[in-house]
Length: 308
Ligand SMILES: O=C(O)[C@H](O)[C@H](O)COP(=O)(O)O
Ligand SMILES: [Mg+2]
Image (cartoon, rainbow, N blue to C red; front, side, top):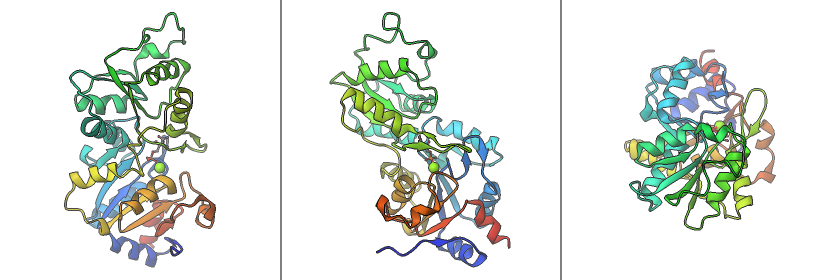
């Protein structure tokens, strides 16, 4: 029986929390921001961690941007000095997977992308040629007689599927046809069912992939995002001096972020209620997911209570 999560609702618990870890891995959507809205006191909390000499890393299942693109998103929100090396996106994890575990040869085997530029850029950075993705011709109305994307290109040997906020029937039909090819592998950047927005939730990558999986008759594709440990292995390869027991995963989803931290044997987990999960998940045993060590209404509460 796991103990009840501790709420960060006063200075004492916040100090105990901060003193327990030297590294904080932050999920992004629903923790730092919701879509284009920065959440309250996020900048102040990250600045406090910097002042306390804590290591701060970012681990996001959002594959729409490359790590480099994310540095611009951080800067645009006023979150300064975040380097590409601190960011681990599912687009990056998927590129690592395709390079190291897919048996594809970047010199000859191309990848069809269902998703946005983050996937294309990270796959290209490890040497792959990509088709589809943000090709503007995919925004044209689906017409079987006119599409330039069929018949399938025989050099395509994998489909990589991620969140596509410009999803349409043209993209679905071409991706479906590639998935009907027996020699084409199928890989998902992540499987999140919903994507937090403000104030509305949205269908997430996992829900879009379910449509492709069901229609093509394929089995579930390997998931490169949280809670897959591939992302955490990538973090520890990049930062070999980190100690798992001194790391805390901060996220807004039990089935991705918190599971990722628990499965990765990190010292602690903080669930924030500013994204997908609501407080009721902490007393609802039907979901079957392990609970975090700590929880808070939002990340900014760390700064607010520390400053009391
Ligand atoms: O649907 C998705 O791709 C995800 O909901 C979203 O991008 C999650 O991002 P994260 O919360 O891991 O930053
Ligand atoms: Mg999130």
